[in-house]
Length: 266
View (cartoon, rainbow, N blue to C red):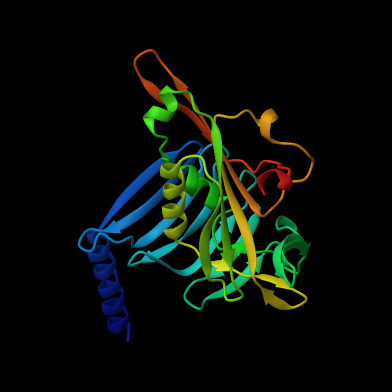
C-alpha cells in the first residue's frame, strides 16, 4: 500500500514538473496594479495560476487558475485597497459561492415597461471579476491618436451596453462620440473580458439591465461632474495627457468612478 502511495506521489510530482516546464510566467504592472499569469509554451494560452495585486496596499485582488485561456475552478476576488472579501465564484460549476452585499449597489438601471429606469434591486448587474476590473481593463494601454494630442483636443465618449436576463452582453450603442479609435478600442476590450456578467435581480427574478462606459479625455472634473451620488451603472475612466515641444506623451490615466449628472449624457 505504501509503495502504491509513493508511486502516486512521484507520478503527481512528475506531472507537476512537466506542466511547470511548459508554462511561462508573465508579469505586467499598470499604475498601482500588477498582474501575474502563466502561458502554455505550446498553445500560447493562459494556463495555471493567475493573480492580481495592488502593489501599493499589498492586497491580492484576484486569484485563481486558467485552463486554455478560460478561468476555471474557484476564483476569489477582494475589494480594492482594503482587501475585504468581495466575491467568490466557481467557474467550473458556473455558480456564485459568495457575494458581499455591503459592497454592491441596491439600485441599478434595469429594463421596465417604459424602457430603462433606475430601480431598487435585489442584486445589481454584477461582473464576475475583481472590483473595478472593467475600468482597469479599459484604461490599460488606451491609445489616443497623436494628432488629437498635438491639437489639444478634449472631449468624451459614452457607450451604452445591455445585458439580458441570461447575462448575455450586447452593444455598444454610441451615446456620445468623440474619437472613433478610442471607442473601437473600448469595445474590443469589453469583448475580451475574461469574466462574465450575472444579470440584475428584481423581486426575485433576473432582469435585463444596462450600463454606460464613459471615457473622459483631458477635461477637468469640475467641467463635467456634479452631485453627491455615484451611479453604479456608469463606468468612468479619466485620461489626461500632456504635450512637449517635439514629443507627445500621455501623463496619466486614472480609473475612478466619478459622480455624474445622468441628464448630461442623454
